[in-house]
Image (cartoon, protein in one colour):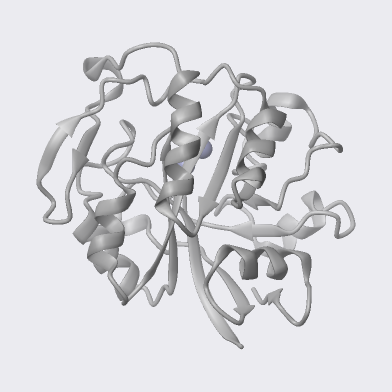
Length: 243
Ligand SMILES: [Zn+2]
Ligand SMILES: [Zn+2]
């Protein structure tokens, strides 16, 4: 087993709020420069740029296929998978339940790009919007598909589960909670882990290249795959979160 430095919450240019500099090549280059082993690509309500990032990363860097899904209650949930197909399955459900059309003048453009950083098209969906799916249903779907379900930036008032719902629903089986870079890991554990009930991770939520790896979570694992990360989050069989 060894340590893996992970930044599991990174947006590409597809997210309307992210910099257009967040191209697959730039993201991979920055992640390598920052010494990161595993990145999660988590655009708002979409996984359409994951394939391009994975192609660029090839064998050098592990890319988890993800989405940052917005629930009906406006809670952000990270969904992370080993396989793109599983992420695209969730994307089908998300798209079926994501009303509205993007207004580029208000929210920004949503380019879908290839591994050469070329624009192949633009998503017309309202990716920044909320789905009509309840928080609990999204988490259940992620887990049923073999993914990790992590409540994003729980320390943030806006779009964090505690800010939106007032608490972490006790009957929902989350794999962990993420705190933003505004908190240290110790603060995150103290304030949000509920005496060890929830694992705490930190990730950059990068919307600009210079933010990639600003904060990371280091895991001690056998391999950089979701099942191992899940074991690390649950502190099982020697797998653990190191820092
Ligand atoms: Zn978010
Ligand atoms: Zn985000």
